[in-house]
Image (tube, rainbow, N blue to C red; front, top):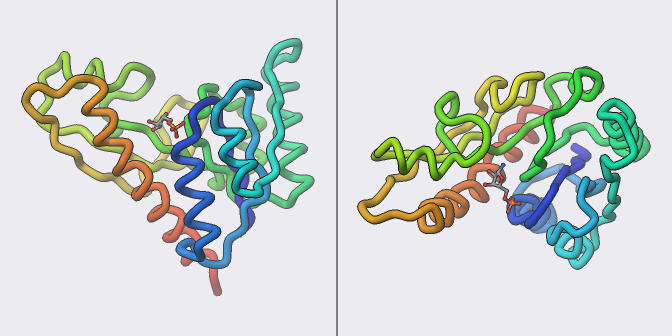
Length: 190
Ligand code: GRF
């Protein structure tokens, strides 16, 4: 299973996936490329340190379709079979989705369908929720709305701040994303 990862920032989920592929925890898999739409994404250096090829494709000066077409071309040139979004802060165009049917997945820091979109932890805390969590799902044309692959519940504690809650959920995100890829690699093997 050749994997391509899209990032925009820190890249801690990307690191979890790269390390799990490299250690053999996700079997029969290979990391083909990490692409960022931000030149200053901290994740780029982390991918390079791990020997993964990186490419920056900025949106500036391109339409959404042109931008996505360039990303698709880089992925297809390397025979990528599965695209993982890991903190990629853009909505994919219909042509991107159609280029990888049911082969694009995303991680989101809530128990979808609750709390799609941005500022999740702020909204969870403001609503006084007792639990939150994270979700790995297939990507379709709507924001954070595709079929769910795996979820993990995380307790919201008394006195939690956005930082403490997001840290606790992020720890689980890394495990959940690796588990989702394990599952997909098993489905793919003969
Ligand atoms: C994670 O919380 C992920 O669920 C969300 O964006 C954040 C990215 O963090 N989509 P990182 O770049 O993987 O560290």
